[in-house]
Length: 344
Image (cartoon, rainbow, N blue to C red; front, side):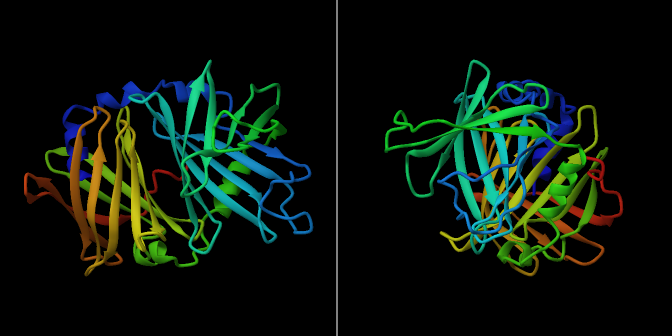
């Protein structure tokens, strides 16, 4: 979907991707990155599950630095009906507005649930505001304290009213650092059991495999790997090796409000896309992608995957130029056994 963007980036040697490496977001989460933290204790009165329901032993958070300036937080928590539910949250620093932007995907509810949140950084401490859907004001906020040895505290406050300055008594939970294996175990539990939501069903021919394609006049190879995320979302992670490497991630999900499969894309130079109406059309097609580059540039695309088979597929991208749609790339991907993310 992003070949025309990638071609331009290759032309300048990927040099701009280093500009975002050291952001306030990375500084604020530096002590947490690369580690998992677990809390074992009694649930609070405001939790979404009741005391008589079975819950997992631990609430676990794993923090991962993605391509340069993005952070992924994977979480396991007690579920509302026994067992556990999971969520994965992507954090991005918006230098223009000086705020944190987050998108969180969860296994909760019938087709999964999407939350859009924001946050601030003051004195090196990141505070995340969690919003209820269809409301304007935050309902809670939290921050992580400094790491002391192998422990860290998460401080949460609930909003008492519509005004964000009206907060309840802070609640503090202490989390303990976990062995490195906990992160990979948690990631495995969050994938591989598709319930075939509209998103995973649509991308079923591509799931569980990696696909590679080269570029005209370049030795670079773009590799995309499609995986199921919590049975409800599709994660397309891609990378072009280099020094530095260029990469990004697309998350496809079913939006219950629009009754359509939508997507978000994040790349390693600070670009973000949102796309709409991903549907079956002799393959897979999407009607619109709005791309916002790190320099504030806005571009509009649409595209499709054609000739999907076990061996490969063709990706076609068009850009809206004036009043006309102009084809800007046609790229053939082949199935590959090389997964560049196996060790990540």
